[in-house]
Image 1 (cartoon, rainbow, N blue to C red):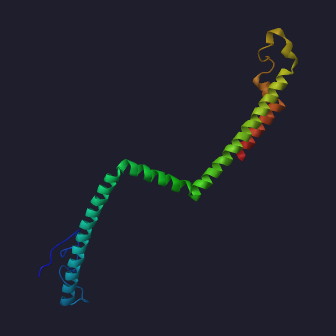
Image 2 (image 1 turned 180 degrees about the vertical axis):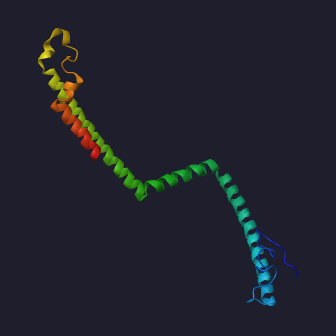
Image 3 (image 1 turned 60 degrees about the horizontal axis):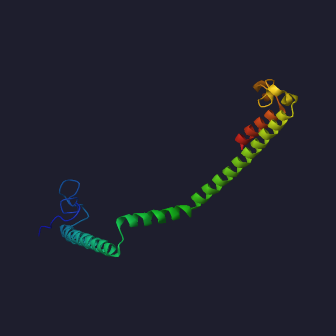
Length: 168
């Protein structure tokens, strides 16, 4: 009896012969080898039957979904929504969200502090005697050049805050 070759390369001509090109392994008798060949043929036939049944079930499921009005697009949307919910409930997402929230709070505090320092500096500039000079009423006095501002205590304070913010 010559068994047929079924399925995905699991047939008689694929691997039943020994490495020496036809000899059976020493531990197998000819009768045992024949039994294994028959069993292999049965298993391959079962695999083929299961593939056919699975294919029929998939077609039937697709028909039912079509009758229910479930389109492939709605299935994709549902899968994406479920996936996003799974991501949001994961520990990694929660930790990342917490870290980003803390970073946002720190950034907000630093910008607020920087804004306060700038406001304070503008207040100091308004208090300078040059403010009442008619020609300089609405412009920054010439004596407050960038080198002069950099040596001011307010500028150094702001600079320190920015440097320290970067170290956190």
